[in-house]
Image (cartoon, rainbow, N blue to C red):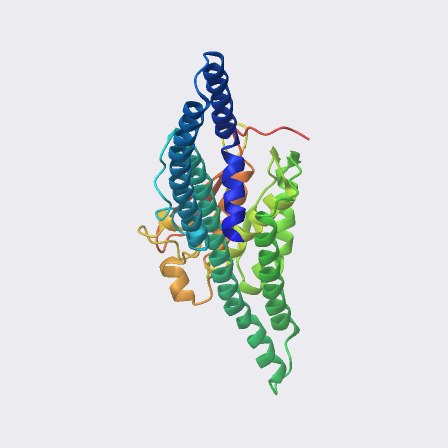
Length: 334
């Protein structure tokens, strides 16, 4: 049944050739008849042509049959490579082969990107789950303690959990096709004050000084996403600052450069080029045992989407300066 179906498909594919053969045979038959040639000679010529035509047809169908079987045989093994495909025999087959190769390469690129994305997400959730265990365990120990429960201590651990949950939500939303950027002019001072108010308890708890005066600047940005970035930078500064404090100010002629400077433990020179890499914790992160290496990666990714620039200047033991540049952005105002 399969052979019959293939033969029918083969005839349909070569119906034009068959039509031309029949047309030429009819033309020669009419010509022979008009010249008065004997019927036996006409029939003999037709039989010879038909015989050799049948042999050519059978051979060509056999090649066609083998090629179809070969294609069906490798159809389910072609997901990784096109090496098993038969070599193209003519220009049309070569064009189809190149088209198939382009589609296959695009598919492999998308599969690779998807696999990398899944691995990135899996790695992040593994780190995140490990990280969030710390404040949960601390809260459990505080609640099980026979001494008087300190509400401030529990509040701090609960605050950390809230921050980790906020980070994972932003991580999910950032790569979503429906990322809700609302680009317009915002008062930078108002955005920074929101972040400072959120971390006010941490400043008090760690007895750190905050130097912050009014930031007389408006920036073209998205308030929600920029606020998340500033919160992450403040969180890092507070985490790695034991004494002294944090200063927040602007630079530049139009005050379009925001600086968040701390007196913390700083970053080693060899770690600076990699601080924005996904999952990179550096020496400080390895010492802290709680860092996921995702915060600064998210910050740069968000700021890049907002057409802002970020850089870090730091020396081990001398603190860190995080600089966000709002100049020269090319986005449309809402």
